[in-house]
Image (cartoon, rainbow, N blue to C red; front, top):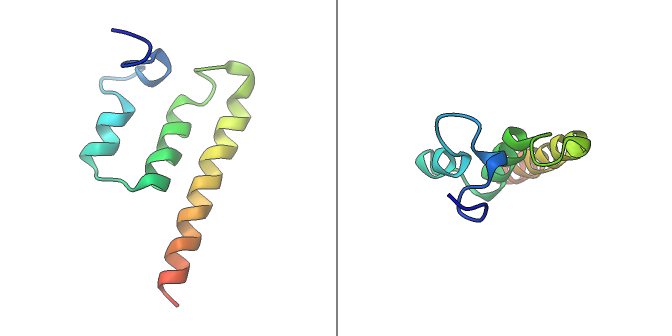
Length: 71
């Protein structure tokens, strides 16, 4: 396994995050939120809060998109 195809910070469970994202057919914002949640602190422990903030940013973007659709 290479770090490009299977980076360690996405491989801490039984499946890779990308496989779950694709299986669930998540859109870009939801997929990225999940990616950042799952890797928080694993790629770089000093950036755990930053990863969580990125996840929140994508979640808020998705909420905004859905809110506009409901108008």
